[in-house]
Image 1 (spheres, one colour):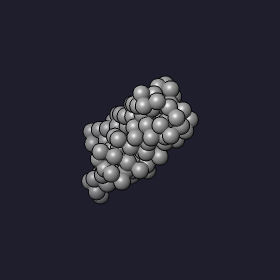
Image 2 (tube, rainbow, N blue to C red):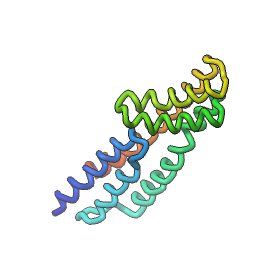
Image 3 (cartoon, rainbow, N blue to C red):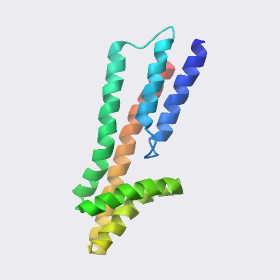
Amino acid sequence: MSTLILIFAASLAVVGIVGCFMPVVPGPLLSYCGVLCLLATDAPPSMTTLVAFGAATIVVSILDYVIPMAGAKRFNCSKMGTWGAAIGTIVGVFFFPFGLVLGPFLGAFIVELIVKKSVAAAALGGIGALLGFLASVFMKMLLCVGMLAYVIFG
């Protein structure tokens, strides 16, 4: 029975890693559920481990919304451009895999052009949105890979 639980926990952690690239899939939460599955095994994780991974999951989930907007703002993207990046990210899911990278950039770029910014300023806002999105994905990946490693190697 323990082997089945480990396989299920590892599967959740792997789906969590895939979810890091998909804005609508809660990757870190799924990976954390994989860690929680280990409670039903012969060698459950310590309370410290559960709290640490749980807190990291909450923090990363919050930062997942903050970092892309901060990246766009850092490159002087307007509030409307930031919304364009968010919408571009969601639309980009439907054009996997290139849409995931181009979506935030194009969303911010197009909205910035509509808001009457120059092409250079719009491109800069789009680059900021893209860099913020990539930083967010990287952060989620680090956490999810760490949880997968914990599930596998304990």
